[in-house]
Length: 131
Image (cartoon, rainbow, N blue to C red; front, side):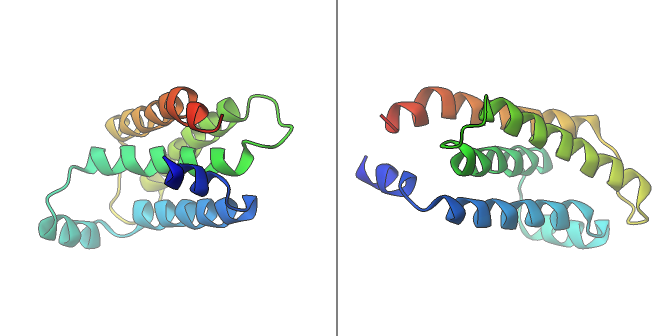
């Protein structure tokens, strides 16, 4: 898998810029008006929960790629906790902001599943590729 090896050798700040962009995209997509979300959903048949899982899966992987070579202890655990807490914060913001969005425990579960799949991928597959 030379493509994966080449992707893993990109400069560390490349991953940070992509990760921050992705986090901003999650934030905007999660906090925009429900009417706009329904317009997009009517055009594309995709499960809302699948989207949540993908958002937080990608978020976890990108931040791991940025922090994997730092002296930080247990970066994957810290990134996973950050992703989970961020997802919870977004759900609370959906509840309190006036955009007809609501707190949904199923969204939190979907976020968590995406994070857990990322952990599994990083621990068992990506770690093998980085040898």
